[in-house]
Length: 357
Ligand SMILES: NC(=O)c1ccc[n+]([C@@H]2O[C@H](COP(=O)([O-])OP(=O)(O)OC[C@H]3O[C@@H](n4cnc5c(N)ncnc54)[C@H](OP(=O)(O)O)[C@@H]3O)[C@@H](O)[C@H]2O)c1
Image (cartoon, rainbow, N blue to C red; front, side, top):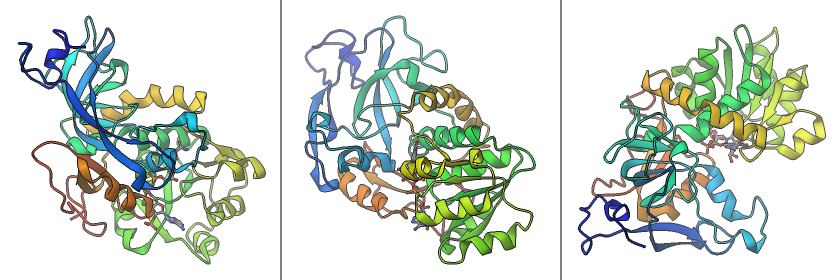
């Protein structure tokens, strides 16, 4: 359907015949690796009351994207097709009647970010205004598109295990996207942070005020050497047996161990697992989005970006993400300013992202 609202969906004039409200999106019609993805054209719905249409400049990328069509959450055919992508940043091109975005106001031309989005790997999308926030000027589009999934996850984890001043807090996978957000938030809460990472990422952890330790054989002893008085709380952002066993060995109170990647082990050993589809987590995470956007706006929360890919190269981007060592966040970039080159390799991050050069 085209109407006067849809007529500005792609930023064009509302004169009818020249209107283009078509967009492209990625979808998986079968379960499998990134190679099952294909691009399709679709008509962007005109926003109704409580909705806005966003022309996407950057689609944020998270491991859950490939997990959803990779069968990690089941392979019931009714789940197909899968439209990957939970977050994005772009420009409002249409807004429903009487609608304001989550951060207040909202008008055509405003730069915004959105989380949660359904099918964020798209060049344009109509979505609930309640999930759309003004983009902080401190973040470019790829960074903004990657702020909230990991930010809300990290906040949820810290909240569940009560991280605060005086705590010695251990993060497994501290160089990962959730880990880096968790370091920053835990430091703001006054905790001492010890984080596991590959050695090439030690400087990143140190930059954010965490003490790095290499994962692998001997991890428990290396942490005991760093923290002879013990570890108060732990976040497993990796899901390996090592991360679980070391957390259980070092943290005496199992209520202060949380995993985002090993739910079966949490059930087996009596600690907490959290996930975005858990109703309590979903409510909490939605409630802290505005606060995290404010933290980013004030420069207290940054999003280290590893690399951007042209929108059409989602498969290659997902292969890098699936490697488990992307070196920072990844984004799909739409529009004329596409640049497929590495912005900042893992050992040489941009001042804008992590402050490292
Ligand atoms: N439950 C939830 O709500 C939720 C939300 C978000 C994410 N997640 C899950 O949490 C996990 C992390 O997500 P992310 O976005 O942070 O991923 P990411 O950015 O890809 O980071 C993964 C990190 O894991 C580390 N790693 C890889 N192999 C390792 C190993 N064998 N031992 C220790 N560390 C290892 C890597 O560190 P080095 O490169 O330094 O080795 C890397 O920094 C994923 O499984 C994701 O699906 C869950």
